[in-house]
Image (cartoon, rainbow, N blue to C red; front, side, top):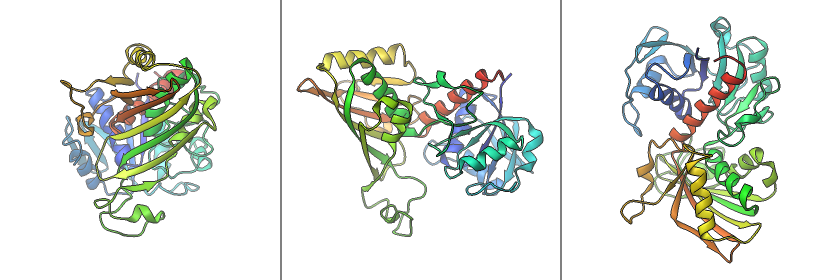
Length: 351
């Protein structure tokens, strides 16, 4: 029996998780019972059915009164603003009788104490967050540390971030077999929904600049995301980001100093073996096509967390490695979030 799931926040990430759920299995990999967002129901249905990046989904979408109908399955919709404080019920009392096992919070803004109240009110048993929530119980990256999940200790769980899911498997392989002394991670990331087409207000002023006219430097927490899952790398990682005028597929350019001498051949073999065995379906090694490099648009829809571009991989002076990684920052991440839902369900004997 599939676990019952609710999703709060129907932005890009929330819709990606919903979409992947019904792509992976026609009637839904998990039983999604309820969706919540500030938007009117007609707008949510419209955005699910008409996606400018991925196109129309391979399932039917409609809405009927308080339900969004996906592939013929009715999913309850509650219009409520849950992006900020949830200290009061604010409309989610309707969830109490719905027997929600896991509530996915894809708003990116909630506080751990407030989310715990939803568990205390028996609205849900567990909460899975789509970012590194401060005060959460654990951050999980599927394929690396999901086995550390303990249902008796972990109620508010993070599925890390899209860039975290790309970087952690790579760092895991290198640190496990060779060791990482220091790494600088540069992400080249598509624009996000809070940025602007024309210059305007943004809490971080540089992110208020026109997305079409500039490459915009900004901070990223991918280094922190990685060390949360791999504590041995704490203090060894720096990271920075550039937002670029593309819609999807992010790049990580990683330069690292390794703990011992190695070669390009050894590193290539380690990564290839990881993609073939231990991290199959999570890491993919790409060698281009007919002697030519693929470009970011070629990886739209890829379910891998980490696509390593093998041709430009370099090792110099036996200790310094350079690696380029691409990943669909919505599709790949949403698939890993579903995998973590599966781990939670199995560990608490719900499926």
